[in-house]
Amino acid sequence: MGENLQSRVRLRPVDLAREHGLSTQAIRNYEEAGILPAAGRTPHGYRTYTSLHAEALRAFLALLPGHGHRTATSIMRAVNRGTADEAFRIIDESHAQLLDDRRTLQAVERALRDLEPTAAPEPGAGAGSVAGSVAGSGSAVGSVAGSGGTFIGPLAGKLGIRPATLRKWEGAGLVRPRRDPRTGYRVYDDADVRDARLAHQLRRGGYPLEQIAPLIAQVRAAGGLEPLEAALSDWRGRLSARGRAMLTGAAELEAYLRERG
Image (cartoon, rainbow, N blue to C red; front, side):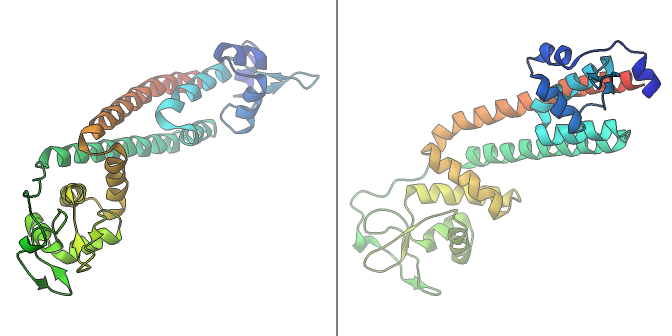
């Protein structure tokens, strides 16, 4: 490899940097990080690069958008060490992560499609309309609370789950019911019912609570399901862009591997 490098056209750090709008210090940093192969040296100690280094730099910069800095660096280091199989394994893991992200997005989209519009509380429903009593360890089973909303029993029954499950979801931050000031019972308003339904759909899809919580937080931050559609569309677009960037990175990496011989 050393003899092969000497036979190539010599390039200065500025030659590599100028093509990509980088600084010469960035080129030196990339070499020190193992992203670029070790540079040759002139008798006076100046770095000299070749077309091989130029290809390495193109490959790294092309890998960045699809894989991120840390993964792209690991890929290039593995290639430069001569362990291409390790580089391929890292790439496979990155693709698997993208696939997992796509599945998460699809699960959220399916969950949103499966959600039925939340029924509004009946007009005039008050504390006297609570039809039910205490079930289990202090859980109310009435259908409507005094100021609008539903108690834990009816909501659990609607979802086909146990009240204990809703209490567990509350502990994980998936639902945030208020407490009835007179009885102390949990009261779930329309937003809580929406969050519970979304959590239920995702749980049925096999997602653990720690993955569901951030998605519920996104729904709340967006102000509901409809504003979330724009966020989902942006999410979908970013995943597509990332997948395409991976293709571009793969092409440049293949060119670098060919250059290495």
